[in-house]
Amino acid sequence: MTDDARTGRPDEPGDATLDAAATLRLIREQQERARAATEPDGRALYAAWGVAWLVGYLCLWSSSRRTADGAIDGAVAGASGQPEPWAFAVFGGAILAAVAFTIVHTVTRTAGTRGTSARTGALYGWAWFLGFLAVAFVQGGLARAGASPAVMGLASNATACLVVGLLYLAGGMVFGETRLYVLGVWILLVAAVASFVGIPLTYLVMALAGGGGFLLLAALEQVLRTRRRRAARAPVPSGAPSVVPGEGPSRA
Image: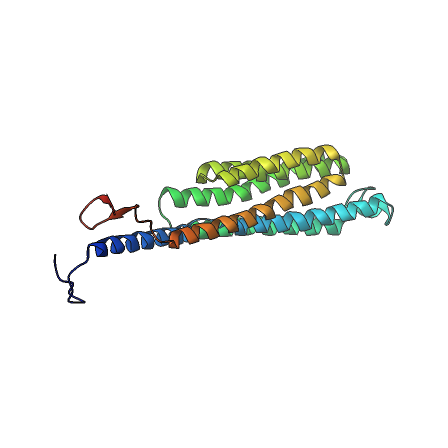
């Protein structure tokens, strides 16, 4: 038994255990902070897309109902039952804002990392830009081929949802996030259902089921993060493995 240089009293048998428990708790807190600082924040990404889809699709639905009900001249929207130009402008702006936020947020969060993780995060972020760039060209090709407004509306929605859904599937596999993968599956299912119900109900389904699904997952992510923080700060159980400097893991 040795004397504690700070207190002048002999070391108690429980001191090493208490120090090891405090060390493990500190390590868990640091790991949680490092994870939060270097990984994309799911809450922010889900919320950004949830708001973009909810606002954008509700505008499309509201405007298409006005033209279908004859509240305005159908020629203004291009065809009866089709959204007006301002609704497309709001929707496009909301989607572009969500895409830009996703790219900037993902690249910024992974900028402090090195190696495979940084490269993967950067490639995933730019995949969003490339995916929607391809969608724009596909839609332009359909318009030049003489597709009707109804076909353009369904095709535009379906192709955009395919990009989002498949990228979330890929993100779930790359980052090992089951919730991200499940969200991708959900978006693909919603897009399939929305394509069958027809305009203007297509937009309402996308707003409520699609945008609402994003927002629900953002709330779930907040709950899970709160639980992880509490678990990281919780006292280490007396029976948990402890680490003593110079030795391997042991039981307290």
